[in-house]
Length: 197
Image (cartoon, rainbow, N blue to C red):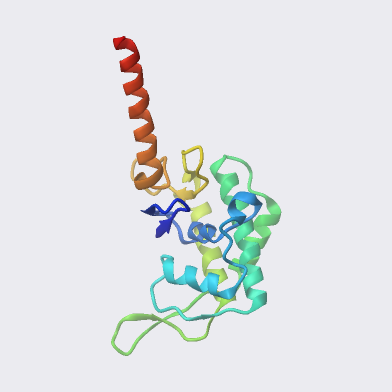
């Protein structure tokens, strides 16, 4: 996804999983709440257009479904943080996620031109089920122990490290990775200058 930071910098971010992309819509706590967009259906629909789901998905979202997506998103935040920190997964949040995953997901179909398309009648509940099922796959799959928080002190983005070596540290090399490298370079230059005096 392409993200725009509050300072205006635009950078690419790969969360590694659909469910972790949903965390970009806000969340519990004062830091994530600053980015809240699920206070209106349009915020969810904007996310649908930007996320890794195939284009062309037309979702009808009720206020109850929007509230359910927000509740599940907040539960997902706590689950992903627990996984990233190596802590047990909170039972109440697992219940929320599993209940959402148990509902029917989004459905695809073959369009008349032979391409893959979304079936008509997509709902917020089906969207939530699809995201919850993705979370089940992430947490129980090969990248379940690779959920990470960005290594920058001032960044809280979560991602699944799907790289082959499994050593990804930054949400994005364009942003946090480059800032870290620049700080390290300045620190080395300052040390060398101090030794040269």
